[in-house]
Length: 474
Image (cartoon, rainbow, N blue to C red; front, side, top):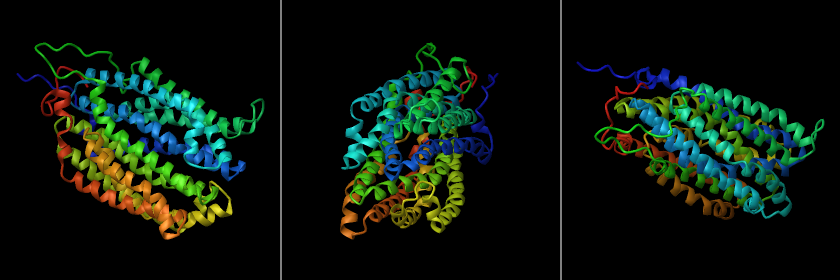
């Protein structure tokens, strides 16, 4: 008599559009709130001048490097947890989650060291202006020093999403961003009994909110939330078993993905440095336009992150055909979002720029800059959906090579194109758009080969994708 199988994850059994939408909508809400962290700080410091706006909007490029470093852990944890849950091996998924959270906290100490000892030097890489560097460093030093807080929280969020729960992270993000928005004016302008801290006050508001952010995940883990499985060690298997879950294995998956984000950060530091030679307004517009195009990014990333959970669960359950359909569905959805958004940004660029600054030079430079960057939004959305979804398979090396090659190419072009063409900061916009289009086409071409469909069968189980394990309840 065949033993009954453990229940399959909903992502393995539900209709794909329904499962994808159920996961993607809360992720979209979380991503919008994540961008709101940066928007809230930038909007509140706007009365302090374009230099303050530039300091806040460009500091995020450095923080991207820190968050990308955490992808060494978070992307690996996503692939491990989703595939192990898809295979019905909940305890092993808990071990991966526990080791991932611990590793994120330790990695965050690197950011702490940079914040305490190197923030002026780091921000100085983006501008030769000593006054501008001092303003930026006052913000960057605080948020860098607190790096372990968002890094552990991001890993906790990744684990819950890999388990198919995206609503709880949305509620946590809502609380954290709301607190950030409330604290900003008190700490920036010294309302009530609070000291007037200026740009540094925006950083402290963000850090306090991030402390609440990670505290929520630690509390859920301590209470044994079903979507945040934690186990310190695996149960011994009789007669030999699958390879043990190790942080080194997760790092092999996560390192290529982390390099993508790290290089992306370095590239935008280069863009900012190149723009700085054309003045504070040009420097600010690089950060402002990036915040505006983030509207497309949050949509595509929401679909891609939800897709990664479904791809991992279905590959773990031995259903690669469903994983393929997840990606196809996500790409179709991205098209219907990107086209009207691009039309809106092309038609009303001045309105969006006006959310961040009233500086006339920033508007003069920003309108054509934003229109050029908008031309690549459809392509960037396609590559984000495809690449993020495939991250759930654990096959990250090829995607990393493609992104890394274009990132390295962008650095010299950021300085050469404005000089060759005499187009100033607009030349940077053309570098972004043309390289993005070429990169997205290569990502799609590689994805169609299908080499990622095997998942992490050998690494997790010592063989191909296993049948669903009836010994554990998922």
